[in-house]
Image (cartoon, rainbow, N blue to C red; front, top):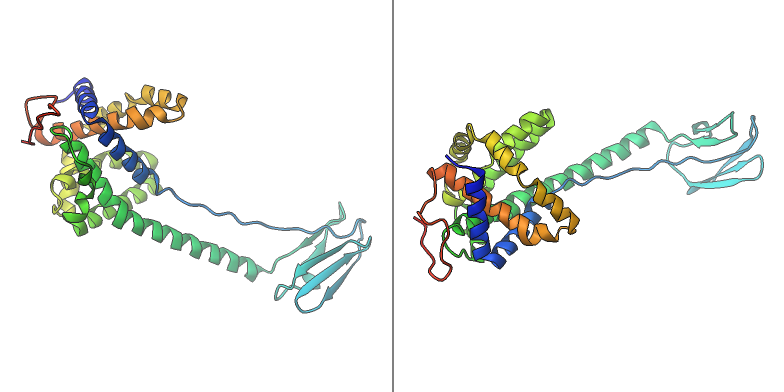
Length: 293
């Protein structure tokens, strides 16, 4: 039905005919797809050196707001007065003469709980921003690339997802994202397979923004049936370009590889959806834009 050479030739030709706009939309799409990376946080622990002998002695003084620990050698350490912390919560190391502050169990549990709450809030905000802002932009960007196969597409196509079937797009791509997260959490390889199975959903929504989620998933699955391995090999064929992009600190990727890849992927969708090109001419004349057939 299609070959890598055909797709890449068509992608390269149409990209060059509308160069700067295609570069701009490719930069936007890269920011959308790469901007929702997971955020991490780290905690820290503390220990205190008190005393210097095998049977180090210390004084424990509390003034309400802080605790002062004085070692046998005169070393002093002042700590905040943690509720529930008393002299029994301080242990002296025997081998090296070190003292360690033992934080009460409930305090550690509280810190873990706070961390989890903060993490969940950040994750929820990220998911909502992705669903309501970035996913419709992705659909608009995909539409730009498919339109650009036939005519000089305009940058305004990026907003297409906000004006056409917005709620349905948000719902469908949110389900896609949730399913992919769950698949990748279970198994890496099945997750990759599902990512290829769902690959055409944004393109389908760009053509049919009101298509119900269930139908969009089924359509993407049908389009990618028997095509996943060939598509994987198509992706691998860009590795050489990606290496060159790294050698140029990403400049080649921004101004050539990214747009080239995006237009090739748009050509892949068209080949799968329509069984070939939607018009006979492989290259459109930028001076005489041809309507999509």
